[in-house]
Length: 79
Ligand SMILES: [Zn+2]
Image 1: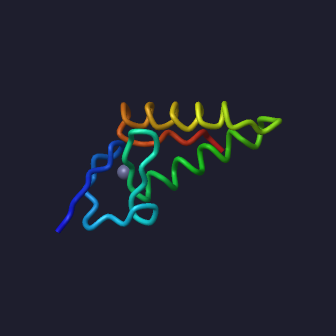
Image 2: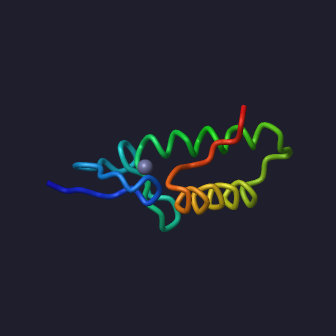
Image 3: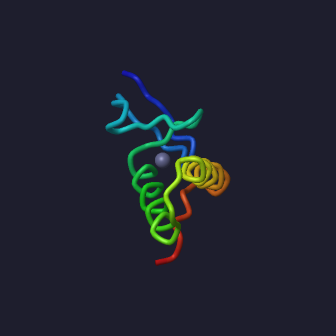
């Protein structure tokens, strides 16, 4: 059995399915719940930011991931 560990919440994911139950972004591995949090956090920020541009989009994603690794979870902005 294959087990991977999420870089953010440190939880183990058994038999990870890439892009389904486990995600690899830049050089960071994250599990599905963390990916959901990341998507929500990104979506929230994107809404107030125009025009859309991939350069800050990638930067934002990485910043949220790095912060998440330090805190042990993705910090979604307050809604
Ligand atoms: Zn996780």
